Image 1 (tube, rainbow, N blue to C red):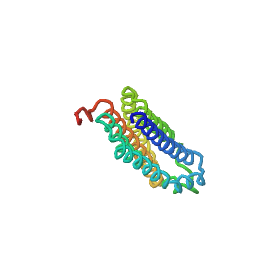
Image 2 (image 1 turned 30 degrees about the vertical axis):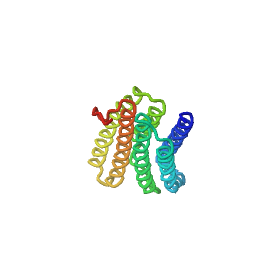
Image 3 (image 1 turned 90 degrees about the vertical axis):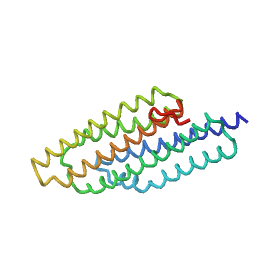
Image 4 (image 1 turned 45 degrees about the horizontal axis):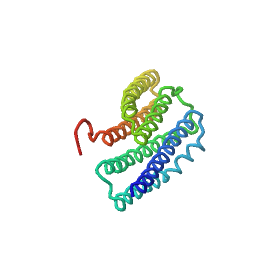
Length: 218
């Protein structure tokens, strides 16, 4: 019976890794489209949004099937509960990526007011955070989960840099205001992705320790 449960749990881990891979690819393609003015790529990302919903549903079904058929004990129940909490944040990350790609598509036919170095760096850190947060869950790695939380501060700093730079650009040339606002919104959506990655790691910490935000839940 335990062997069957472990097999199902491994499949659950594989599903989460698949969803994480889709998220990583979505963010990377979105920012590549932004950096290279590849609007066909941006449209491809936009049209693939339903895949995230399908992957979320796949994890939900497997989790519920394990709960109903395997009768997990408390420790295993925490693992499955954590997976269900994680996919909520993962799906919301995909929503933020879709919001970004909508903005990127508005840039078609425009010349960007400046190279978005800080925004691209934010996206790299966000991809790293999402990937490592899922790895922390699969590998039961508390240190990795806490390392992800530290990266959130770096993303916040970059967001403030983007905001300050945009204010300067608009002050120098008010004609830049519409595109400048879009730059800030992209940075804001990336900052939210970072926050969702932190949420995931907080649930990973709960899975390992039984505590959520330093409070015992089980």
